Amino acid sequence: MHMKKAIFIGRFQPLHKGHCHAIRNILQKEDIGHLCIIIGSADKKGTFDNPLSFKTRKDILEKVFRTKIDEKKISVLGLNDCESDDIWISNLKSIAPDFDIAFTGNGWTKRCLESVCIIEKQRLYDEKHLNGTYIRSCIKEGKDISSLVPEEVLRMISIEEKKLF
Image (cartoon, rainbow, N blue to C red; front, side, top):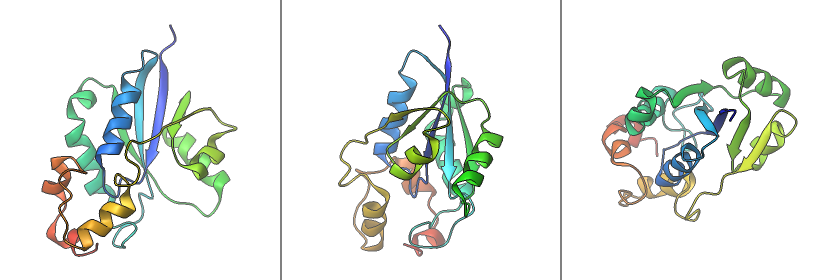
């Protein structure tokens, strides 16, 4: 059986349990040999929509999925935003050149990748609460998010970064 190389693209602002559920589901597929997690908007930080730096997001993902990274089942890469969809695709293909399938729940990402590879819609569970906008709003309002994010997120977001929410 041909083992496929998959990509999963997200901003992970912050990584939440919906992302983790999706990533674990992808890794359970028998035909997926490697998953490349692409951190989108890697060049953005310091705003409400993109408070966390690429480094913080990568560090969190690497802590949460350390054993799968050690087994070389996962790699984590960053992808900057672009003014053009074509340039974005070209940049994606330059950092992850041989992917067979993309998992996404994002309409824009799906549209960009349709002509490049197989797309499998990735539906997150509890999309009402497990989405970045809702979680960032909870942080801003001082609400408890411990049921929504892995504990590494709570430990690794710095005091300075929390001020951005």
